[in-house]
Length: 459
Image (tube, rainbow, N blue to C red):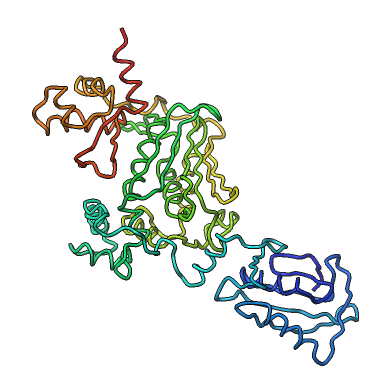
């Protein structure tokens, strides 16, 4: 004991008092630690007087003022010819522990009172309960069964689990239904929930040139968000001597998808704030509600041996079974691997308030390619059929109304030659994207569609 610097696991106190117990509670709620009594935080050794009942009295005070009750180990040592008392406590298995109905955690070298959200998180971790496993108010009939069927097909195709063609049994097997109740995870994946992904393309800090709000079942929301992102980042082509040209996105798509999945899977669904994605000329920023979960720190993410803590275990399991997540706790390892071919891009992560933020930034020009041919992302062909369609969408309209205005009788021809190309290009959007076949489905122009319309109606 040559150092008197207070750390994540060590606290010094001049004498015994309630602050000793508070430190023990904070250690028990974090990773354990020790409180050394008889040494001030200035390093001066004061020592303590130990009588026949002193240690037992201190133990009783700790026990009676904590819940669940703490029983620290206590022993004495000699320092500078004086007796000091050392309290040691391990991380407690049932958390959170309180001191007179107040809860604390250890952060670096000091004690911090827990917020209500942190108390709930500790309770869930202690009981191995995932937040997304709690029951949802919706019923099984309210979920999108067609979407669930597509999910089962993807799981079976991936081969990580074999599911039978029995919807209820499969959902129970995946714990998406528990005690005959639909879980929050099932509603998030296949239902009409209240959580959104808000994406914007910015030209400067306050100038938005396009934006989208993806409010859809998470099973489809990932792909919808990626379509918008791809629309607003550049794609370049080059030749490396082979017959076929090579394409290179401004940012690696695999890394962007990993960051998007991380935001969706690990966000705090007790917080109804949106996931925010901001696309700038030189960077993309992902922000989601919920700081890192459990004992995971920002520094841990910089190393390949970090151990992930899952706030939403069921969501993580679903995206693992579909192959969207390769292995638990490897997302940032994979992102760094994807960035190896992009030396001009740096990754940074931060916590701001109750939010987690990840940024990919272009720090310098990309390496010179052989015969570079840099162009924006290829725009799909604007066919005469699509032009007619977007010209008919001066206001939102349904399928029947559009076919009537365009004098088209063949529904399949209308779908293949008109609707699908316009939807795929992002020129029109659906009022109910989570239920494409809804009877009251309406179509309207997106910002990009309006620009295409303007371009093709100029005199």
